[in-house]
Length: 328
Image (cartoon, rainbow, N blue to C red):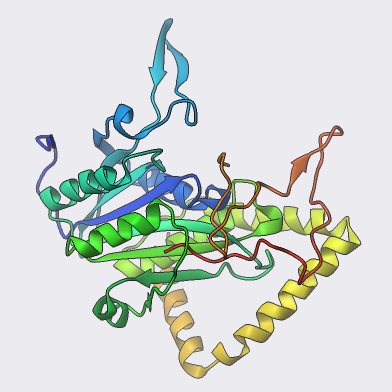
């Protein structure tokens, strides 16, 4: 049963969702929703029953102390609401949780029930995958939808993916079948530095979300965290000549692929985004989604006995089985 007694009437609400797990390389997507919730002081109004959707041997509850009393927090998915002020105020319904272990169709139907009751006009699902992308370049963000009209109207790609999928792909299709406009935004995280957090990917997702739903998102310390993250990875990569060579090969491939995009129209579009932002101021067990729909075995940055982290020697280009793509 859905009870929304404590939720006021919302203004042009958009639901923004992210789920830890296979769809969340570097924790980039779940961290983005957590950032929105923290910056706008979201108020939780509902939580799905953990017993219905989670295997507690996979996602274990945690015990903690509250004024000397032991309490248990169960893994689940929670919904909160935030109001974005400004000239055109609107509300965001934030969905943050863990990819369910079972009953995915019921899980999606329950979320869609909330969306219907709240009058949600658009569902945006954030995801992150491991890809052959260099950490030194802007994070690639792909926006996809199953609705051809929505794709044309919002400058998105109409998804053509076929293969294994996660809860992001399933929820998007459930929205489509229910007649709810839905979009998924995917950040590509370098597969050779997949250990969370990845503030650069989180920042890129928030910037793209900002453009998509036309709201000003306070970024806080994220830009500085993203710069520090890149400097740190630069230093780690520089310690190993093979890693540095591999990163350079990714840079060359990326630059060559993007050369046709350096058109006047593309440059003007990016400049407009820059002006809008300037004027406004202000790991998971089970692997992650990969290009072939499979799973990555886990982070490439490992702790060693000395306490330092160092990227291992990556596979030579052309000899890897873990090419990435989104699963929607």
